[in-house]
Image (tube, rainbow, N blue to C red):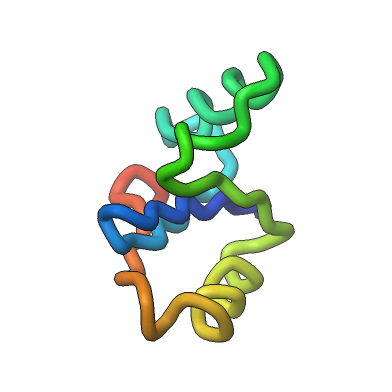
Length: 76
């Protein structure tokens, strides 16, 4: 299943969301992306991944020391 990561620099969080109809955050970002909005006004970004495992691997490699990992409660 595809996943999205919300990388929020000011809050120092890396939140993983699964790409399915249950998560309102993913639905909102997909709608905004279709309108051409991809950045969160300079505070971070949303990144798509092929799977949850890939999103977690990127967290371990690039963000583990800088950001806190959160798994979306709507996606579990």
